[in-house]
Image (cartoon, rainbow, N blue to C red; front, side, top):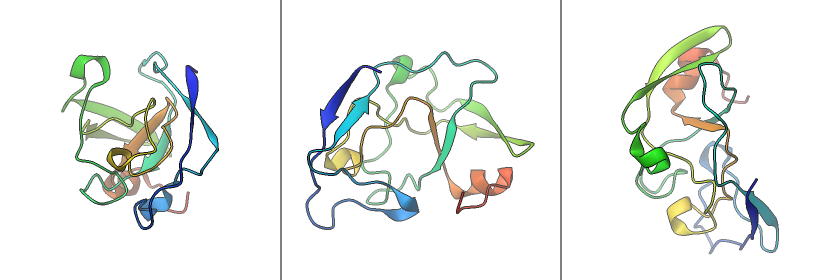
Length: 130
């Protein structure tokens, strides 16, 4: 936990709620995070769904900045439902920003989120409604 930022309602039709994405709400306070938890081989995280496409629920084109891009285009192992798969790191969810077009007017991310394509969810046997 590093601070809070105040939400602003996005302009009409500017927050894409595809894949159940949240949109910022005017006046609501959102928690920001300056650092992530220590990442070990068994670090727990919440799997979320993201399209990573321009003008979709991911906002702007992907960019990697965390830890001087040390994870950029590298592979991580994701485990869930007794299954695992290898996935390439393509983007990072910003835990300090949000509320603007680059972040699809969504609140800042918690520091334990793994956004993944539908193919990752399928491989892990995660039902989309989960």
